[in-house]
Length: 235
Image (cartoon, rainbow, N blue to C red; front, side, top):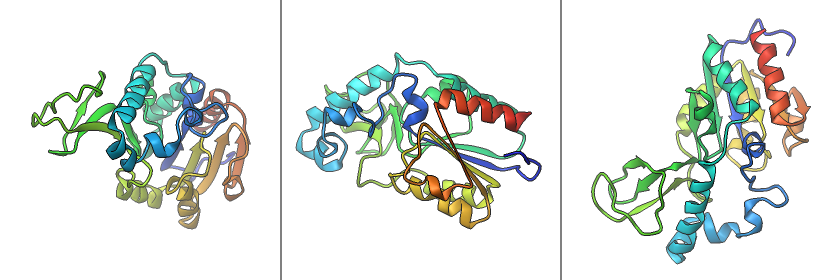
């Protein structure tokens, strides 16, 4: 990344590795939260239809837990880049926590939803939500008891894909941070960006399934790599 002169528009994809150092479990790492629950039991529409109490209790616990966590240096560095970068910037996160925002980032898109919203399947409203859903509270907008976590489950379409692909088309640089390279469609973003002429950089704890697709791949903790990279970009 020595030559930054031709970079104006940046798209950043962040995954669980960015929040892991804040104490938020990763889905696929050894000891991650799927160790206690099968994906099929807590993260699909079919699971919610089959056993809504299990699913709501699981997400209530996650929602409560993330509110006790704090942004780490990787979140803070990306927030600094968001403040100071004069070109276009979009942070597309697969994470359903709010640590990017709490660190101060504003140009953030949650493609997998967020724990701190509840979605009403009756009126389609999304409401800020910090409490529990297990007791089936009424929707603040329509009054129906049809709230579910505003989180994209397996088998559902991620949010705002048109906006993401539009940003990728305009990107001069695509950066993937803390992702496994295993979950599509996000795992395909590097190919999209590369095919459209963008430079590509991976910052990850270890080689991902897609490391070979990037122009450059750096390995180490996000809390170290991301501040170093942001210093380079703003230097």
